[in-house]
View: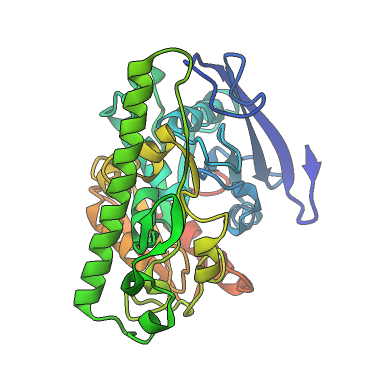
Length: 393
């Protein structure tokens, strides 16, 4: 336990539980030896509280994000939990992450003694959070998209008391569908391209703003490529299963996955974002670089995270199943989460108590925007107060 420069107490939280698996898909100690070992950080002021805000993201260390610290400085206790795949989503299976998520919520309520836990889904944590809440309220998933059995029923997930969904997407699969480069003709030779679908070629860029027929063709080609990859993944899994033995997984490399036309044509899904900028930098550079969406994956992870027809971590589906109060916060200059994703998720939510706020001018990470970060913190604080939830309760 340490006291930082803002007067916040930082406390390492260690959560562990037993789990058996047919094979180990995580590197090192975190998910091996029949035990899942998780690390989290509790940020809090030196005052007591019965309310906790919980953050988890599929692949990012959330304690370094701006909102957790800002909320802690405002008086809230904030727990930032890492799952079993810290900063590496290569083998991530959402259904397994839900067990990690549930272990933190149980620890927060039964060990730390918090009476109310608010689930905060930031960015990619949005569809993760709503997936967890939907299964905590009523189990409807009994196997992973790869067909491996998963037992949510006996996990006895504890539902959150409210959900905050900020700068989020419908799903990782939908983000990849929007972003995958449809010009790739040969998955094993990314330079074999369909010329008129090469978004960043000078000839294509001259077509801006893109016509609706071009966008339709582009989106259809993206979907076709996604499905070709998924077919290859399923075929490979079937081959391994038929073969039997100890070989149970394979690796998958997917080239060119940052070619959403909205990054170069601001008339598509308009908001206040800057042109030719995505959350990872210049989109053309990211498209061919090593850190794009879904670049490296296992077969099972592709189906659970990235396959548009198979992934179950879909916030539209999940929010139809939740009943707790729901707050959606749109960052109007978001260069990661499309505004249509935010609005479609909000419209799908069946909670009787839901609200939508827009932080005008805010980019995804509030980069050089401390005043907008403060505005968002006040928005969250005011909304929770209307739900009779206060920092010092």
